[in-house]
Structures are given as structure tokens and as C-alpha cells.
Length: 464
Ligand code: 5AD
Ligand code: SF4
Image (cartoon, rainbow, N blue to C red):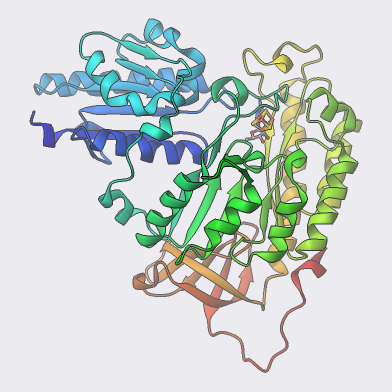
């Protein structure tokens, strides 16, 4: 095997930050001669970039490793060796346990150590290596910049991690344990990385962090810059037309950030602001540090600054002790807040988190029922929001080919998927499209569809 022929396959589970991290692992290993492949059977190194947020994540990883073991045996019969690595939050949470249960694994590596990947892989040639410490040095100072090839392949949209970890300790959540304490990357590094992305043709960047609006990065003069300040600087980069950020905590939604939604045109009118529950009793047990009322008042303030903002959120049903009355409060907040989109999950006990050992765990069938009811309510809201778009002209960033030939799919400023008949070459263009049809999950539009003399549709905010 020559250095230049090594192939790397990364399978990514979970959130957008894992997608970003997989890209950075690619970069780190490119320096070592690894080239990415989409075919695991051709890979000399397979990395599972895992997620631990919900459900039986660890079990899924073990069965995935079982499949990889078979693949490795097949390759070995052909005289080829395969190394198997487990990265991400299951790696961080399970550590040594992974190599104990699955001796086929050569390397277990937590998210804070990705810059050490090449060195750890070399070490793993002579026996399994487990690296789940939170190192002193910052991985971002040591990770190589994206390779020109990966930048070229980035397409019109990209993720950029600006902050990692969380100090909030919601009682259901594993993130503070797997990703550690809140750390913000310095402003200059982010401007440089965003500049490289824009130069490679990226027009929309989504700023990522587990608690992204708690961002407080150091400026070159030592001053601290908040998320609003960072967005203002990124918006000045030529070619970067759209900026988004996710995911936020209501407690960190400060006035400067709300004003940024009013004042910075590149900042898209979409906000993912999880509430998790509509019941004050449950919010308290979750240690959310906000109430239903403070959340609703916050939304009002944000809508006063940016009336058309599309609100998105996360909900958990069946948190320990949740009664029918608590759940009714959750259904009510869905109505009152008016979500353009929302994600809902059955509570899943995470080992090591306070809620996992709370009394009054909710039976699975109750969780299931509540989830279905909540999803129906969310779906209605989504449909109403999307229907209000019909007849409007909206700027769509064209991202990728659609399912049918001649179709492309793009995103509206409100993060809706819009299907439109356009040639493949339109990828990366921002095109004004008239919305002709709306389903709960996507819209259809056409270029130059509306006669300019027709009246424009009602303003979006009138839908609520
Ligand atoms: N069970 C169910 N959902 C969870 N989430 C986080 N932890 C859990 C858990 N233990 C959800 C929250 C969070 C989203 C990323 O995942 O809604 O906002
Ligand atoms: Fe988890 Fe978000 Fe709560 Fe942090 S703020 S503990 S990441 S749910």
C-alpha cells in the first residue's frame, strides 16, 4: 500500500456539527495521504462519527461495528488490511468500553482530539488506542485548513463550527458531558475560514455550536465579541450572501443578536430556538432556566425586530413526571409561538444525566401517543406557514439536483426546501422564484411565474 493510495470512509451520524467534524477529520488525514471514498469496501480506514443524544445510540454503534468486522474479514482474505475507528459522542461517552466489547476497533477518539488523529492512528498500528481526554491545547489551533479539493467540492452551502460544548446542564442532555465546557473559537480564525469558504464559492454559511448564541470569541485586540458582532463581520465578506446559526438557547438571545436580525440583511430570517416543553413545572425539572412566559415574551421581542422570522424549535415529550396537563401546555405553546418548523422527540434516558434516574419515568406507549399528537400540531403549523408563501416571490439559493430530471432544489430565506425547474448549472445561483404550491415539507416554485401587475401576497407574518 503506497501512501497516496490510502482510502478513508467516514460514516456520520447525528447533528450538523458531526458533519462539520467529519470534514475536518478528512482534512487532518489528507495530510497523511488519505483520500475520501464513498465505498466502505474500498477503505483502508473506516471511521464511525457517532451521536449519543438519543435512543440506543451505543447499541447502534456496536451493531455497525459488527457489520464492519465482516467487511474487514472479506478484505483481509484479499490481502488488504482495514483499520476501524470510533469517533464522536459515543466514543467520548463509552471510551474503553468500546474496545472491551468490540476488540475489532483500533481507535476510539473523542471530539476534542481530532487534530491528533494521524499520530493516534500510527500508535494504533501496534494495539488499540483510546483517547477521550479533553486536551489542554485547542484542536482548532492544530487542525489543518480544508484541502483545496474539499473546498471545491463544498458547493454553495457550508457549516462552520464557531463554538463547542455547553455549560447549561439541562437535566436530560448528554452534551455537557460529551462535548465538555463551552469554548468559543477566536474571531480571526473564523473570518479566515469563512473567507476561504466564500472564495471557493460558498454563498451560505451556517454557524454551528451546541449553544451557538452563547458565543464569546476573542478578537485580535483581546476584546470579547458576541454572536451579533461575529455575524456583522462575516456579513462583510464578499460573496457570503447568507448567514444562519444553530442551535440557540433562549437565555442567550441578547438584544444585540435580536437587533442583528433587524439590521443585517445577510442574516437569514430563521431562528431555531428550542423550548423543549410548554410546562413551567417540566421546564424547571429540565433545568432550562426559562419559563413558558419568558420564552413567549422573547419571541414577541424577536418578531418586533424581524416580523417575518421563521421560528423553529425542539420539543421533548415524556420527560419524567410529565402529566397530561403538562403535555397540554406543550401543545398550547406550539399554537402560541407559531412555529414554521419544529422537531420533537420522545424523552430518552441518557446514562449519567440527572433525569435518567428521576422517579416517574413515563411509559413508552404514553410517550408515543404524545409524540404523535405533538407532531400533528407541528405539522399543521408548518403547513400554514408554507401555505402563506404561495404567490410570493422568494429568493432561493439553488443547492442540488431534485429527484426528477430538470429539477433543482434550493432553500428559501426561511429554510424551506423549494423545488424548481432549472438547469444543473444554476447550482449556487440565488434565483427569485414565485411559489406555486406548498406541502408541509417542501414548496414548489417557478422562475418568473407571477405577472408583475398582480398584487403581491399577504405579508408572511399575517399568517399568524
Ligand atoms: N431525550 C430526547 N431528546 C433529547 N434531546 C436532547 N437530549 C434528549 C434526550 N435525552 C433533544 C432536545 C435537543 C435536541 C438536539 O435533542 O430537544 O434540543
Ligand atoms: Fe443540551 Fe442544549 Fe441544554 Fe446544553 S442547552 S444542556 S446542549 S439541551
